[in-house]
Amino acid sequence: MSGPFALVDCNNFYASCERLFQPELRDKPVVVLSNNDGCVIARSNEAKALGIEMGVPWHLTRERFERLGVIVRSSNYTLYGDMSARVMRVLAAFSPQFEVYSIDEAFLGLGGFEDRLEHHARHLRSTVYQWTGIPVSVGIAPTKVLAKLANKAAKKDQASGGVRALMTVADQEEALSRFQLQDLWGIAGRLSARLQAVGINRPLDLRDADPRFIRERFGVVTERMVYELRGISCLALDEVVPDRKSIIASRSFGQPVLKLDHMREAVVAYVSRAAEKLRRQRLATAHLVVFIETNPFKPADPQRHVTCPAHLPVATSDTGRLAGAAVLALESIWRDGYRYKKAGVMLLGLVPAARVSGGLFDRPDTEASIARMRAMDMLNRRFGRDTVALAGGGVRRPWKLRRERLSNRYTTCWEELLEVPRPGTDVRV
Ligand SMILES: [Mg+2]
Picture 1 (cartoon, helix red, strand yellow):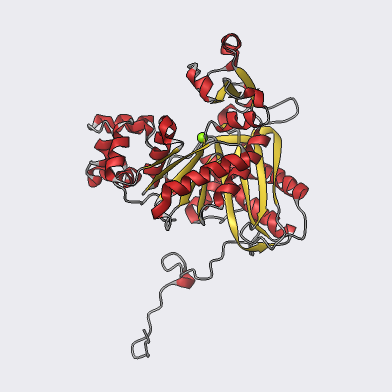
Picture 2 (cartoon, rainbow, N blue to C red; picture 1 turned 90 degrees about the vertical axis):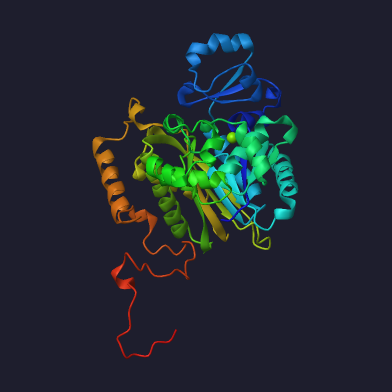
């Protein structure tokens, strides 16, 4: 993916979804609660203006909410997952370079649009709103870290009309000076405290710091942040702190998928990847959404875009349990006769794995399951992805990304080492 980049982020996504089908909620303070109506996980602007904080437990604030006229909704992951897929489908049409980052955010590569970046972004914004009813903000910049910041600036500044471009150094400096270190993508609380301990107090200090010093003290990812702030793009998406609202695994296929067997393999493989990320963050979930779609750029083909939610009785991080639910969901939406181009899996409603409690009949993950997953992750980390995997994820994987032009694995595979011709043989270069 090459820059400039746009980060598109849905405004107050869950609250906006709730409003879509209940217009009486417009202009009202709305909050959405986490699983089992625990605490506040989304707020409309009106709720934010009342000073309602993220994460406050509902049972402690119920009376206050009633007094203030705050409208409360339980989380509806089926609705959010489906609306997310719809928004993403609209966004994907605005650039061939497109990366979903979370349930309500995506990066677009806008190389080639340089002469009309803002115009393109405003068109995108109004199209998403018109077609889905979801308001979005767009931040544009030469790097992803700056695009993320541009997005915050777009949200903060009413006059921006939801779009902010930081393409010049002067604009970048102006925006950087208005934010704190912890507003930067990937700078969480502890890291910002450590940076402040060496005199890096503001985003501009970090941009102007010596990259070698930063690497020695804080590691290579933070060093790359320095370059990103200078407008030099060098950060891959999964190197940054993951988003804790959702995990998404999705890819376009190398060739269209026509058979349920192949689609099942793809979905299991994506669940496996998402579940691995889930475990890495010590999270679990009971909610997932599977989606499959045909290629919108081939209008002559019959088109189909469907999503299907699946809910488990108890949150889990076990690949097998999640894959089982995902496969059932897939089978319920599958229709033959379409050339499917893409599929994906979203995990929503993430909760800390340590705090999962069972129901009367349903138990959380057993010790054996946890140990099995730990062993699997360890082996895959050590020997490479898919060293150990569910058989359901397929072995030959005909649906995989096209990689016909892949070069050899010169340094890690005995069969693919560089061969040096014997002296005297004819070498053609
Ligand atoms: Mg958002």
